[in-house]
Length: 239
Image (cartoon, one colour):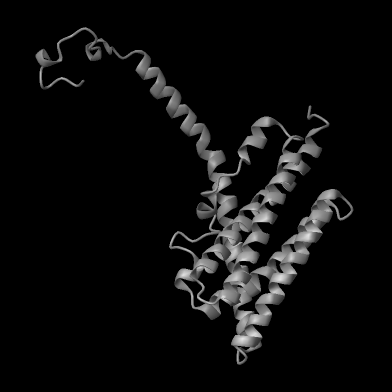
């Protein structure tokens, strides 16, 4: 018989999973903006990147707090599986293994990335807001973050109008479609990795048990070198 608490726990796990992925996305954005700040030769633009990065770090911290609060409502084993690991931004695709975007994208393409992703982020936060509830404390935090994302989008748009006045609307739509496809591929990759982990974890555990059992029956007395003259040991021996 299923426990009555399980449906509620399933709901919490769904919310934790979404917040967990979003925390990685925000952390990745913070790193990208900080890298752009360091590469910028224009003081005014570097200043904008710096404060954009600062906002993204703040968002990441807020998502961690929400995760910590919700992690207490589920079993410890489940909560531990959502432990944040900074290098996961690489395996999850939020930061490219080839380097930061500013390192290999043209400035125009990089600004287009910021422009479209901030708008897509706002759309994602609309869904998160429904998940956590707009009238909750978490809901108010999400609303504040959404305001920041729209401000970032507006700053990128202002940059476009100033430095690339000939940029056509269809070009921005192409950028948007490209980022939507990238986001979907990241989600597909993440879901499949979780599925493969479910399949292969029992196999890994079985192999570990079998290897451990074999080691128990191994005679390792020949490898004990305490009190022996190492110079007298055969050169063919393994120390």
